[in-house]
Length: 94
Image (cartoon, rainbow, N blue to C red; front, side, top):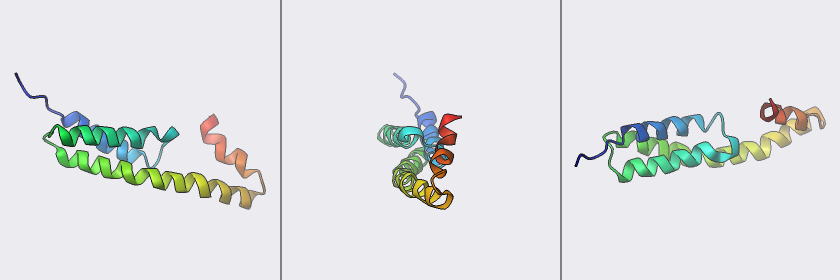
């Protein structure tokens, strides 16, 4: 029986970890990056370094996104005088 190659999972872990900094709906991308990173590390894919990098990016992206969700919306609201709430939610609506 051949051993599966987890190169794709390791690569996707890194891709999702990097994109989690830019597009993060409902924190799904960093969670997926973390899960795929763990799977890639545990199963010993040939590109284990990519899985480790994806895991780290996913773990760092969550607190960064929480910070941005909390303080960027407040900052925009203060600057625009209340119109910022609408402006901050436009990317989610479109």
